[in-house]
Length: 110
Image (cartoon, rainbow, N blue to C red; front, side):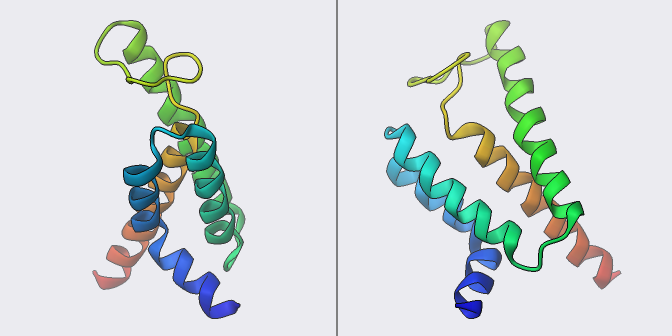
């Protein structure tokens, strides 16, 4: 089980993309799968910083998109609420975690 959690943690960004490629039109299923990936990625070697970064992405990413949608910059073909799909906040949370992991690894390399 620990190996599976480690693999999901390392591959969470890729899994996010794969889930959205295949299930973006099925908001509840895509959201459920993304929540599962996120929960495993957050639980594996849990720390408060990872959680705060995920939550910041979860809130601020969709909020910025809602503003841009309101002003007509773009739109989603299948929005669920306030112009965005249900899966978008989780996707932004996972993206924030990806960039956190990337910058952490890059800092170690320098």
